[in-house]
Length: 386
Image 1 (tube, rainbow, N blue to C red):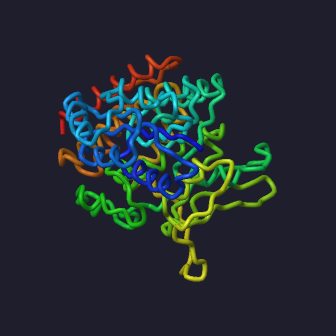
Image 2: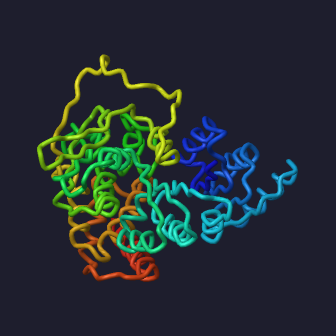
């Protein structure tokens, strides 16, 4: 039996991970859970799954949870904050840590889990965006596997399985294009948070949904793919695939392209990361090929959606630039959701932050965290002029 720790258990990926656990009670068990502010949903999870170690974002919520669980006769270890995330990620009984947090907050507990030799099921792409070189080196030193949970990276991982990686010509990440792929610039200027949160194919958290609408999510995935699969940026392409049935592809040197197809359901890649190297039967909805009305592909328009080009730029610059890109984007997205800036101003804030930061080499976690905080402060300063 695999024993699971989940960072971000009340978020979209966390909840779907627990659904997978429910389907396989003889193969999977939850031993530790961490969540943010959604304490009521977290209480229900703690009562249902009875983890040994739990954590919430604040001390106040942790004290509340302790009282609520005591009434149920449950007495797990209860923690809070970053220290709590680390404690959940390094729970002695856990063998696999699902990192389903949103944003760079996942970096410290993920590194702690790697140091504790836990297998990582990675759904927190920001960890590799901000610190890909450091994290992959740390994983190699501790002989820890990083298994992708994102549907696109899971697809690439599966298409590479059993193949000679030297024969890979390129990988092709597919993107839905989000809800605005046909809008002109004038229309994009009128986009509201409510409009941007209506993704046509996927049910996701707020931050990743906005990133999907701006194509920044695909840019972050490009950087993540570079580190997961040890590729150059020139070998990573993006195509818009509105139907979201092909989750990504690998083109080999002989001209063959292997594609991964499936329903747009995150429980499938989550399950594969948890079951690997096995595949388990499940009762999830199946893709009916005869009902498909066609599969189409388009070039991404980086004029209307410059975030993708910014991500390529930062990735190629390397060093501290991806961490700056990621942190500035988090600040800008939150400002957009709060109604402080317009949709098209998200990449503008990111671009200005990057321009104000000459990339430097980073070799330690402390340096990466310093750069992350600098970028957040700088992006906030830039926002004060809007």
